[in-house]
Every structure is written in structure tokens, then in C-alpha cells.
Amino acid sequence: MEVKNKKAYFDYTILKEIEVGISLVGSEIKSVRNGSIDLKDSYVIFKDNEAYALNIYIAKYEEANSFNHDERRSRKLLLHKKEIKKLKEIKEMEGISIIPLKAYFKNRHLKLLIGVCKGKKLYDKRETIKKRDVERENFSF
Image (cartoon, rainbow, N blue to C red; front, side, top):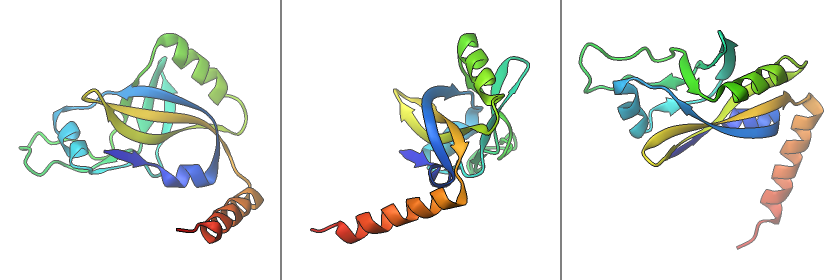
């Protein structure tokens, strides 16, 4: 099971990708295994020398009892202190964002692939659309 943030690949130029762990509560992991996760409009912030992923949607697990999780809560990212410090410095640069790109399982653990991204201009997006159309036309069986 792999979930991609397709909008991020269209709206941003990915400069660097980093694999990180994510801290989840009990019913969240079951919901993710059912495929109820959406990375659209999510981003990473830094607070108190820790990294958090905001706005990741994980649907409530129907079979869970009344102690179900909040669907859009902030979730802590599992990184080393050196990595957090380095990413924090990069994020302070103008025009740089840190965006979750993919969510996937690796050895029973949920991993996020976060990207250090720079926003695309409108003309860059048009060029991406052109390339995609040309590839689609040139594709043959």
C-alpha cells in the first residue's frame, strides 16, 4: 500500500527526499492499513526542536470504540536531532517548503517520504502539463 501526494508533485519542484517515521495512535494505524489516508494539503512544521506533520487526513476507524482519534491532528515525525536542525535551517530559506510526498509501509512500520520543495511558477506548471501530454501521445502498445 502506497499513497502519493500527486498535487505536491505538480505544484512543487522536489529538491531532496527524506524517509521519516511517523508517530501514530492505535486506531490510526488500522485505518491506514485500510487505505484511509490522504496527504493532500499537508505540510511539515517545526516546534520546540521537533518536527510535526500537519493536515494529514486519516479517517476514523469504524470498529474502534469511543477512544477514536482526531482525523486531522498534528502527528510527530521521527527524526534525529541533526536532521531536524538541518531541515529547520533549510525551511527558513525563502520559498522552501517541506511537504509529505508518499506514505508507505516498510517492515510493518508506516514511513513518510518528505520532500524539500520549491514552489513552481505558473509557466513551470504549464510545461509539466505539456510534457505529460507529449508522453501520453508517444505512448504505444
